[in-house]
Length: 112
Image (tube, rainbow, N blue to C red):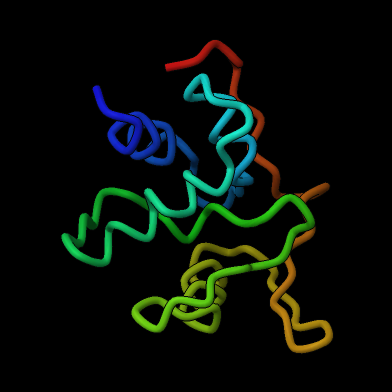
């Protein structure tokens, strides 16, 4: 299984209404220092959209939506999260999610 495939498998497990961070996903796939690579893996979905990967549920460790992609904008990500019942607020031109309320806590931290 490739790095991207492992990322997608973990992201598919994030329940509706919950969030994970790029670093959290990196740790769960066994590459704890690869948060940026997780972002690139999710970005690769633009070339071959996969509706089964809920990319919108992954944000940065500070709770901000950090995408700068034109194919899936921060506004689109915020909208998708709001549709799932996640409270998303705008602060200083950035969309913010309260991770203390919405962070996904998987039962295992064993790498996939």
